[in-house]
Image 1 (cartoon, rainbow over the protein chains, first blue to last red):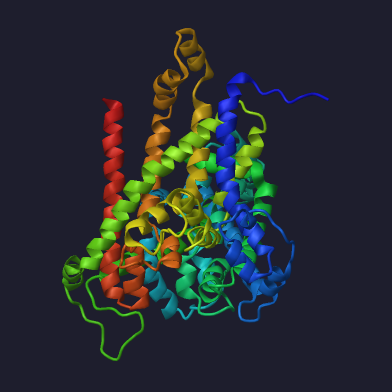
Image 2: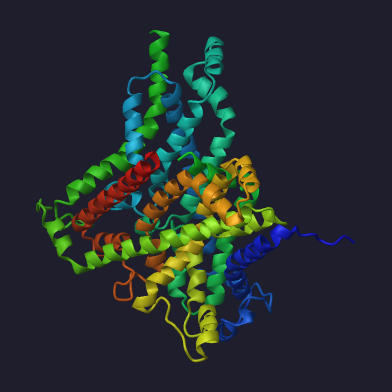
Length: 282
Length: 295
C-alpha cells in the first residue's frame, strides 16, 4: 500500500483548504442532519451540540411532511419554478441571440442606436424599476400568473452583450461563404452561427439560471398564493409560518437545494467557466 | 422586391422582439418612475385622481429620519462586507490555486454556497444565530461561560455584522472564481524570475500577484459594491429591517414604502435617488481607479 505523499510546501495550504471546506460544509451538514431528525424537541435540545452536525437518526418523515403539506404544496412550487426557469431561459436565449446576431453581423442603420440603448440599460439596477414594473403588470392584469414572472427575464441586456461579443468574432469568410451558398440572413444565424455558439449559450444559461432560481424581490410582489409562487418565495413563507418546525424547514431547504446542485454537477465545467469569464473580460 | 430589402426585413424581425421587451421592461418603467416621483401615485387606484405634486416626495424623503438611517445602513453594510468578502475570496482563491492534493474536490466544496438559493442560506443561518443555544451561541458560551448568549440578529448592535457575515458566506465563491481566473492569467515566468531573485513567498505576493490582480481587483470592487448596495433578500426574510430599523437598507425601505404601504409616488423618488447614487458610485470608483493606473 502506498502512503499519500504531501509535498512539503503544500501542508499549510492544505490545512487552510481544510478550514475553508469545514467553514462551508458545517452549516450544510447541520441542515441535512436536522432535516433527518423527526423529533422537533430533540432538535431544539441538541441544537448547538455536536449532535446537530452528525446525523443520529435517518428518518425521511420531515421530507414526507414537506412534500405532502396541503397548505404549502412543495411539488407545485417546484413545478412553478422549473416552468418559469425553463421558459425564461428558452425565450431569453432565442430573442437575445437573434438580436445580438443582427447587431454583430447585420446591415441595419438602427444598430448603433440599439447598441447605445443596450449599454445604457446595463447601468440601470433592476431594483430601482420594480415599482413601475409592478404598476405595468397590474394594469396589464398579469398579477399572480406565470407570464408576469417569465417576461421580465426574457430581454436581458447582459446576454445580448455576451452574444454580441461572440458573434462579432465569427470569421467574416464563414458568413460570406454561407451567403454565397444562398443562405438568407436568418439561415446564417440558424445554421451557421447558433451551432457554433454552444459554449456561450451554456455560459449565459448558467448565469441566468442562478439569477432566476434566486429571484425574490419581484416574485414576492407579483404572486399572491401557492398557485404561481416559486420556491424561493415559498421557502420564506414556510419559514415565516412554521417557526418552530426546524426539521421541516431544513427538509424544505434540502429539497430546494438538490435540483440546483444536480444542475451544477451536470454543468460543472461550463458553470465555472461562465462565472470566470463573466469577470475577466469586464 | 430586391434581395437587400428582404434581408433587411429579416434583420428587423430578429431584432425587434428583444428591443420591444427592453423598451417595455426597462425604458418605459424608467421613465414612469421619474414621472411617478413627482406625483402622489398609489399602488391601488383610488377614487381621487393622481396629482402632480412637484418635489414634495423628495422633500419628504430628505426629512424622514428612517430614510437617512436606511442610507447609513446600506453604506455601512457596503463598507463592511466589501473588504471582508474580497479578503475571504482572495484568500480562498490563493489556497485553491496552490498545488494541493484533492484540489478539484476542495474547489467544488467552496463553490457550494453560490449554488444555494439565498432563502435556503437564510434558513440555515437562522438556526446558526438562534438564541439561546444555536451553534454560534454554543461557541460563544465556550468562551464567555454558560448562560451567556448574544441575540445576533435581534440586537441592534450586532444585527448588521451578522448580516455581513451571512452575506459574505453566501456569495464569496463568485469573487473567488474570478480571482482564480485572474491568478491563472498571471504569467508563470514572473514567479520563476522572482524566485531566482530570491523573493520570499510574501514578497512574490506583494510584487507579482498583487499588481497582476489589479484589473480583477478594480472589477470586483465595483461589482461587489453595487451588489452590496442592493442588499434586500437576507434582510427582508431574517430581520424585516429590524430591530429598530438597524438593518433597514435602501431597497428594504423602498419595498416598505412602495409595496407594503403602497406609496408608489414616494417610493419612486427613493428609486430615482437609488439609481443616481449607484451610478455615481460606480462612475467615481471607475474614474478614481483608472486614473491611478494610468499615472
